[in-house]
Length: 127
Image 1 (tube, rainbow, N blue to C red):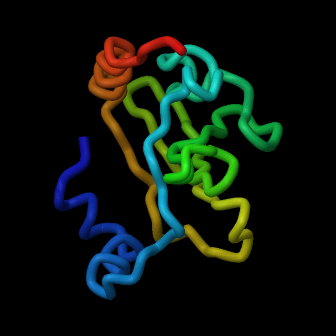
Image 2 (tube, helix red, strand yellow):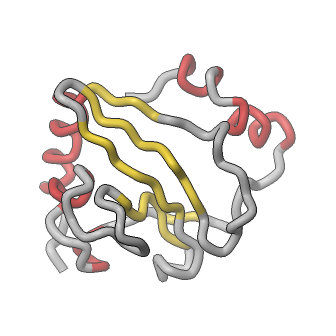
């Protein structure tokens, strides 16, 4: 769902790739059932409760590499459209002054996005 054209359109990603500077402390994967964020499909469609605020569609996209999501999360907003899904308005609560405007938005074909999320359900161990 992401290609080299996506990277070249986002100077924030390119900056960290070229400078070899780590953009963050250390992100790890995210398994919503482990954190009890709700079912994977509705979570990644932004249909569960917002994770920190009160805006619908706000989700944790990545957790800290230590395993505690609130330690070092990457937060984004999911916006659903008829034919696409958009991730935008990224933030990191421990770096409130960091500007993520050049990071994203990331646009996905909705059908493909939903297929991938549904495929992930098969890998979810349901803890």
